[in-house]
Amino acid sequence: MLKQILNKFLILNDVQAAIVIQENGEIIQSMKSGIVIKEELQGVLATIMLDSKKTAAEFGNATISMVFVEFSDYFLILGPVMEEFYLAIIAKNTANIGQITYEMKKNQEAIVSQL
Amino acid sequence: MIDQLPEGESIGWMQAPPQWIFSHTVRFVGIVRVVIHDGEGFILIKKGNALVYYFKHGRIELRGHAALDYFNSQPTIEINLCKYTPEEFSEALRICTIEKTVLKSADVQKLAPIVPGPEGVGEKTADDSSAISLHDQSPPVLLEPSALIRKEPVTALPTKPVASVTERQVIPQPAILDDPSIKIIGQIKKLNGIVAISVFNDERNILLMGDVEIEPLLKIARSMLATSTKISPHLDWGSFIHMTLQIPEGNIIIAPYHENHLCILTTRTINIGHIRRILRDIQQDRNSGIPV
Image (spheres, rainbow over the protein chains, first blue to last red):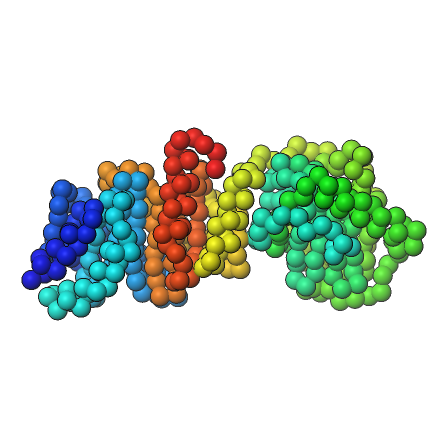
């Protein structure tokens, strides 16, 4: 079921991967297209999640709504789903960010129900 | 006098140490409006040469080096760089010259009535109009960088008139940000939803536009920068464009900017797409070697 939800992201233009991941880098479920998720990437995602949580806490103990990291070829959007679980979307820079974030919000409850 | 001066083209308000003004205006022609507490003043600058310093708080007026010393006694000051056309610059100089003539004839170099200033600031007028030439034709006054940096913090306006100072010569500091860069930062700051924008490097904040405390913002920006530095070598995704942290209060964005970094604080309502395009353009120009 979680795969079906993640697949909704893959049908969006230029989305390469949709991953439900824990803060420690453990992948709960993923759907990908034309991308290999190596251990290195898991480490990167874990670093972003943990560091961002810490950074947000410095800002008046704020919680993260979303983290967006963009490079010239790809970008990454990380959104908290519940507790230490996050949804990560990897896409080419030509992908529509608005559409992706809309789908992330729309599907959050459905993802939570599967965890 | 301030009200009579031409408006000029505003690049935007920012907070910066006074020394910053002199190291970043080597190609700037115009007026730097200064606000300190409830007082306001200006520095008339022509390509790195400060021709007129002026500050007024209530009935206290500071001119020339007295004004400069007061500016330099502040760790940071609120400034607004406004570019002048040659006509506007001449007009501003003319106004300053007339003002000086009027002042001289009225012999206002004497002490003014006691008026409490900001933070218990000096109680007397320190008029040092003799220090700076107000005429466009006269050689510009160059200031030593060392003269611009006070070694000891000064919390009050000078209470005595500053001794007559002859022209001090100096080499302007190399500019860290040039005019177009400052203009770009100013344009970004003007966008809807931008609360503050800072240019910083590993050592210090270089420029801040917006009404925020810089230290907490820099701390967060540096944490984000550290994260991006940690992850970038592990991703074969091209050059780093930006990292945005969205929290309920708004967004914090960091991005490379020349050899420095940008930190942008925005509201939640910001058009992220717009900011993203600007940051991508900056990155592209940087990669293609076009000065931004």
